[in-house]
Length: 180
Image (cartoon, rainbow, N blue to C red; front, side, top):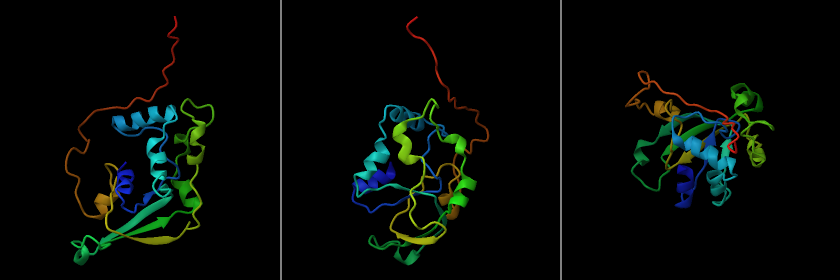
């Protein structure tokens, strides 16, 4: 969602994700994932489709951030690209080793949607196995509670670490005959 808004506001945007595919099944403690799954079940892939309207913006799959450096001298210049993000474009072998295929719906699964076919595999970019340096004005790390971005920048996680909380997520298939 952040990338969609950045692109909409005219900020040249790239989105990287180390996963081979989009997330098909929820794995977060929040309503957003469930909401997105409901949208998806109706064929409404609003965020991914909405991004394409901005110069064909898509998530670059199989791209792993490996280092981040900030040029302190240029950080106060709003036009400077003071951030250097080093990424690695994973090979198919690296991607397969890191993937969990059981999270990808297959034909016949309750949450399989044929409209998801384009998202079942990453697009080959020709950069596989290579390292790339991206110079940026902004980096948004939307990488969850075990944030690589936060760790790489040396920031501690402030707040609840979840060690003492008890909670749960229920993924289920509700089957019923409501006509009786």
